[in-house]
Length: 98
Image 1 (cartoon, rainbow, N blue to C red):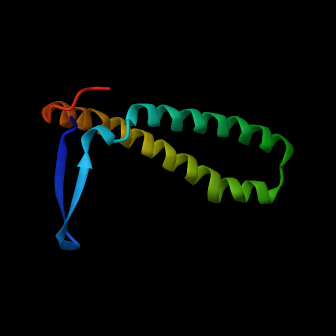
Image 2 (image 1 turned 90 degrees about the horizontal axis):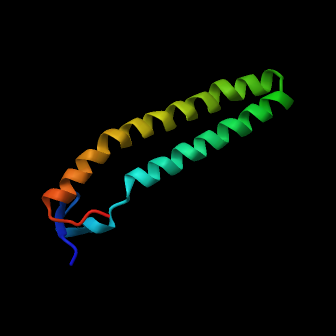
Image 3 (image 1 turned 30 degrees about the horizontal axis):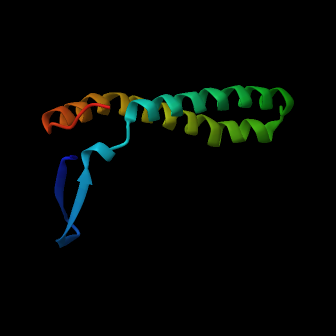
């Protein structure tokens, strides 16, 4: 049987939000999937750069690609820090490990 957590919704005092701990996203596999997707995108971007070498490409790279990469890497670091915390919550609440 799955553990249930009830959280008060601060915007609607009368409503309750139910979360089944077993339904929480598996951050480890999601993180690996995101890392793999970023790796694949980097390969494709390197191929694109070889064929597209003009000021527009450089502007795109500075304004979009570099911030995008930085945000993904930041997200991966955050997930890495959050995973052990969620694992502890699962263990403390008696939720079986998957």
